[in-house]
Amino acid sequence: MDVKPGVNIMKKTDFRQGVPSTTYSIIAFDKDREEMGVAVQSHFFSVGSAVTWGEAGVGVVATQSIANLNFGPRGLNYLGEGISPEKTLSLLLESDPGRDYRQAGCCNAIGEMAVYTGSMCIPEAGHIKGANYTVQANMMLNESVWPAMADTFEHTEGALADRMLAALKAAEAEGGDIRGKQSAAILVVKTYETGDVETDRVLELRVEDHPSPLDELQRLLILHKAYRQLSAGDEELGKGNRESALSAYETAMALAPDNLEVRYWYAISLANSGDLEKASDLLGDIYRKDENWKELTRRLPGCGLLTVNENLPG
Image (cartoon, rainbow, N blue to C red; front, side, top):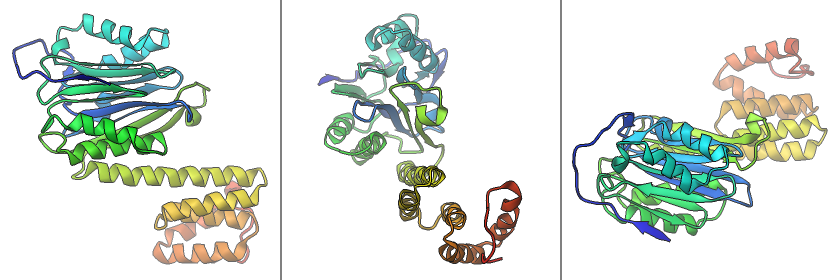
């Protein structure tokens, strides 16, 4: 692993096109899942809108520490032209008068990585480039933050988003941003491009302003998985695979047991597949919590979304 420490010197420079998103982030690549992503947390409002950039089949970019937002789209453009990550960062930095205050990393669609920490980034600042990931941080409470991120990512299994979130949590446990915490984000895209947005962009979740952004990001990630399972159930039901559909629906319910949206569409799908008894039980419970769902059910037949409505409550 290549480790670059921060430098404890400050001087005036040109901050044009700069956003003070001092923060910590991770860029990562998963060959087996054909995914690449970037995740970030900071004591800065809406950090994801500044730091995280990605495009399926092209790559991902993180730009931070008095972030030059042009690094995002320009970096993706260079990567899309087949320019290596190392050369991409070189091109971005050579024309930037504020380069000494920048921190950035990028990854292309075959897992090549590059990362940079300017000599004037606010300490503690540094980065690590490992196998299939980079971690980068500035204005940290202490210099153990980014090594903890690297170690946690390397020793965590599961989906790429879960591993990146674990790295962010490790950073927070080490003290994280010296100012505290405010926002966080995760972006994951496929390493190939299909033209189908739902396929190409695996997930994009942002917590813009929250006292515990990583806890909230964790909640949203679980909810995202539940909705994915709900969609998978609908797809399987449309193919006539009732057992596979029910399995997906039940997984969604287990992930988000209190979410009325998940419960409601599961019930409607059950009704359309002929399981009126179970659908009625679910709908009855939903209606007791909020009667507006009952009115919604009355409207579905006219849209062709409910094909059977006899013996249903309401």
